[in-house]
Length: 113
Image (tube, rainbow, N blue to C red; front, side):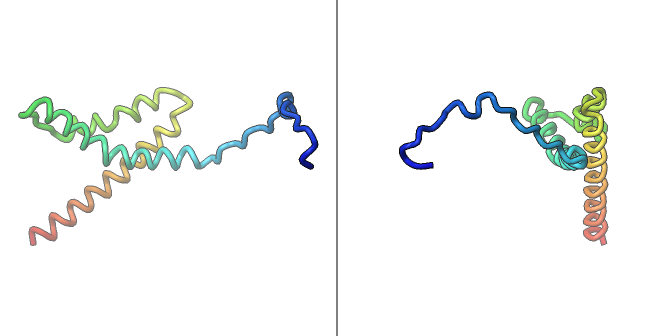
Protein backbone atom coordinates (compact mmCIF):
# COMPACT_ATOMS: atom_id res chain seq x y z
CA UNK A 1 0.00 0.00 0.00
CA UNK A 2 1.49 3.29 -1.04
CA UNK A 3 1.07 6.68 0.54
CA UNK A 4 -1.38 7.94 -2.10
CA UNK A 5 -3.95 5.11 -1.85
CA UNK A 6 -7.03 5.87 0.25
CA UNK A 7 -7.77 3.65 3.26
CA UNK A 8 -11.20 2.04 3.41
CA UNK A 9 -12.36 2.48 7.02
CA UNK A 10 -15.51 0.38 6.48
CA UNK A 11 -13.68 -2.71 5.19
CA UNK A 12 -14.21 -4.85 8.31
CA UNK A 13 -17.70 -3.66 9.28
CA UNK A 14 -19.78 -6.33 7.55
CA UNK A 15 -17.18 -9.06 7.68
CA UNK A 16 -17.93 -12.26 9.57
CA UNK A 17 -15.81 -12.59 12.68
CA UNK A 18 -14.12 -15.95 13.23
CA UNK A 19 -15.57 -18.07 16.01
CA UNK A 20 -13.87 -17.79 19.36
CA UNK A 21 -11.69 -20.71 20.34
CA UNK A 22 -13.21 -23.19 22.80
CA UNK A 23 -11.73 -23.28 26.28
CA UNK A 24 -9.54 -26.19 27.24
CA UNK A 25 -11.49 -28.86 29.17
CA UNK A 26 -9.05 -28.79 32.08
CA UNK A 27 -9.20 -25.01 32.45
CA UNK A 28 -12.31 -24.94 34.66
CA UNK A 29 -10.99 -27.77 36.82
CA UNK A 30 -7.60 -26.11 37.26
CA UNK A 31 -9.07 -22.72 38.15
CA UNK A 32 -11.49 -24.39 40.56
CA UNK A 33 -8.69 -26.28 42.29
CA UNK A 34 -6.59 -23.12 42.65
CA UNK A 35 -9.63 -21.19 43.90
CA UNK A 36 -10.17 -23.89 46.53
CA UNK A 37 -6.57 -23.64 47.70
CA UNK A 38 -6.83 -19.86 47.95
CA UNK A 39 -10.24 -20.19 49.62
CA UNK A 40 -8.82 -22.34 52.42
CA UNK A 41 -5.88 -19.99 52.95
CA UNK A 42 -7.61 -16.60 52.75
CA UNK A 43 -11.26 -16.91 53.84
CA UNK A 44 -10.65 -18.13 57.43
CA UNK A 45 -8.12 -15.36 58.04
CA UNK A 46 -10.47 -12.67 56.73
CA UNK A 47 -13.45 -14.16 58.60
CA UNK A 48 -11.67 -14.32 61.97
CA UNK A 49 -10.07 -10.89 61.59
CA UNK A 50 -13.35 -9.23 60.63
CA UNK A 51 -15.35 -10.81 63.45
CA UNK A 52 -12.68 -10.04 66.05
CA UNK A 53 -12.62 -6.40 64.99
CA UNK A 54 -16.37 -6.10 65.61
CA UNK A 55 -16.62 -8.32 68.69
CA UNK A 56 -13.51 -8.24 70.88
CA UNK A 57 -14.41 -11.34 72.89
CA UNK A 58 -15.46 -13.55 70.00
CA UNK A 59 -14.33 -17.15 70.16
CA UNK A 60 -14.17 -19.50 67.21
CA UNK A 61 -14.32 -23.22 66.79
CA UNK A 62 -13.46 -25.28 63.76
CA UNK A 63 -17.09 -25.62 62.74
CA UNK A 64 -17.78 -21.89 62.29
CA UNK A 65 -14.58 -21.24 60.35
CA UNK A 66 -15.14 -24.37 58.24
CA UNK A 67 -18.69 -23.32 57.39
CA UNK A 68 -17.49 -19.84 56.44
CA UNK A 69 -14.97 -21.46 54.08
CA UNK A 70 -17.58 -23.74 52.46
CA UNK A 71 -20.26 -21.10 51.79
CA UNK A 72 -19.16 -20.21 48.25
CA UNK A 73 -18.58 -23.78 46.96
CA UNK A 74 -21.93 -24.93 48.35
CA UNK A 75 -23.72 -22.06 46.61
CA UNK A 76 -21.88 -22.86 43.36
CA UNK A 77 -22.91 -26.54 43.60
CA UNK A 78 -26.56 -25.51 43.28
CA UNK A 79 -26.17 -24.33 39.68
CA UNK A 80 -25.47 -26.76 36.85
CA UNK A 81 -23.06 -24.46 35.01
CA UNK A 82 -20.79 -23.98 38.00
CA UNK A 83 -21.00 -27.48 39.48
CA UNK A 84 -17.67 -28.75 38.06
CA UNK A 85 -15.88 -25.62 39.24
CA UNK A 86 -17.36 -26.06 42.73
CA UNK A 87 -16.40 -29.74 42.87
CA UNK A 88 -12.81 -28.92 41.97
CA UNK A 89 -12.86 -26.02 44.43
CA UNK A 90 -13.89 -28.36 47.23
CA UNK A 91 -11.19 -30.85 46.17
CA UNK A 92 -8.52 -28.11 46.17
CA UNK A 93 -9.67 -26.93 49.58
CA UNK A 94 -9.57 -30.46 50.98
CA UNK A 95 -6.06 -31.05 49.64
CA UNK A 96 -4.88 -27.73 51.09
CA UNK A 97 -6.53 -28.40 54.44
CA UNK A 98 -4.85 -31.81 54.59
CA UNK A 99 -1.48 -30.24 53.71
CA UNK A 100 -1.92 -27.56 56.39
CA UNK A 101 -2.81 -30.20 58.98
CA UNK A 102 0.20 -32.31 58.02
CA UNK A 103 2.56 -29.33 58.29
CA UNK A 104 1.04 -28.29 61.61
CA UNK A 105 1.34 -31.81 63.03
CA UNK A 106 4.93 -32.11 61.83
CA UNK A 107 5.99 -28.90 63.54
CA UNK A 108 4.02 -29.79 66.68
CA UNK A 109 5.77 -33.18 66.92
CA UNK A 110 9.22 -31.66 66.22
CA UNK A 111 8.78 -28.88 68.79
CA UNK A 112 7.41 -31.15 71.51
CA UNK A 113 10.26 -33.64 71.32
